[in-house]
Image 1 (cartoon, chains in turn cyan, purple):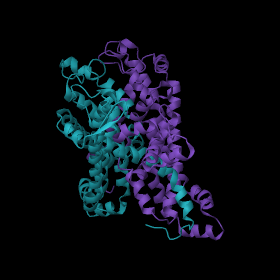
Image 2 (tube, chains in turn orange, green):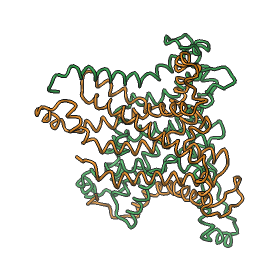
Image 3 (cartoon, helix red, strand yellow):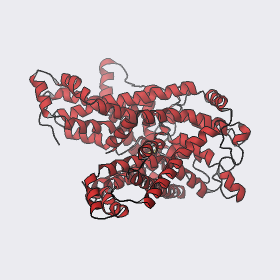
Length: 294
Length: 304
């Protein structure tokens, strides 16, 4: 879309864009370019030169079992938490949209979790799921040793999935509810007049009409699970036990800033960037064409 | 709707109520745990009746983690990011929508691409840039031979250096450098009728006048929505402040949470940890509750 009426003094126009351009050049394009450069060189941690090594950094990362472990942990985390958060939110939004008594109240409260900082809710869940205090301790009293995120990788993974899903149920709920409410009431009424029940109407009318939202949220949830998980992992598990929750962004952070392996961290950043770009393009290219539009 | 579905209605209520409990339980547990003393909070199962030590614990958490200045830092950072976003995005969108100049489409795409890569994935090099913000310009001058020229002509050796670690600009600026708000404004500006622009021009208003007197007042709703979202987003940032504030004086409240985790060897002071968590999660929660309308609207508009 273009404006028909514009201002002719375009030098002023460019000036308006200058602050933004300076910012994204300094804090976006330069660092992104730097990451590419570093990933192709061997960087000294304290400055003082670098050696061109071509794709060696990528080779050494891709042949490292720890890295593949981190990728699979990230994918497991992304898959399960996205599925959980979206399914719960979809059910809650669909039911809230039935507008029975009290739905206005649920509309307000169910979005609260999204306002909370990931590390804060992580600390809350760390207590709630602690094996010796909190609530899982009760389970542990009945079956000793059943639950210990500090020792058992699967338990630790389950903890961070619960914490992340809790926050993103609130997020997905907002979008699902908005999508449901955008469906014209007359459509649903017409279907009801034709004798279709509540569940039939959901599957045949509402669900197809919100598929764009579902795919949009799918991509957003997956990319957020790569980024927003950092605080949760750092507070709840610190990547442990035995790297079971060492997700990709956490590994970039610990390799880059704790291990001072800038080149390795940069190469990992590039791989993660590519992954996110592919996801985004996938969303624009393929998904938008296939789904139903109003 | 039109039919009677008592069974389904009953289920709807049950499931919604379960969802409500699921959403609210962590808040309740944190609050109750924050009111117990050391012994009660570690009881199995912990009593769900509030204890008497709520204010004592809040005070202890406040003092141990030194939350006063940290909350102030968080507030400055969040306000700075929100204000910066609201202003800079408006300027950029105005430039993209209301002017025709060579390279406009290119600039549009330059900005659009920044949506794809969040700060978290390019964290290491961004840190290096913030350590010396002028480094990109120094490198460009070195590579183009400009610094050599300057040194020849004036005898001054060019060494641009401006560190932003442990400073508010260092906290704020990299968080502003994305396109989130620009597209929100762009969508809105495109809906502003052309007649308005024509009338303004007829009355002799230049672009600046039109922007300040007509466009900005019209976009007040957008500003509120974007400001709310950005405030919350910035308040909840963790990785970035954690990295660039090596000095306690600029640390934010959220990064302080790590200090509150009970040590493995020490006493399990969960009551203090939960009191601190409560203090830190309260401000964003208050914003969400009070600004709900803008929050929901901004979220839906910025992401789509």
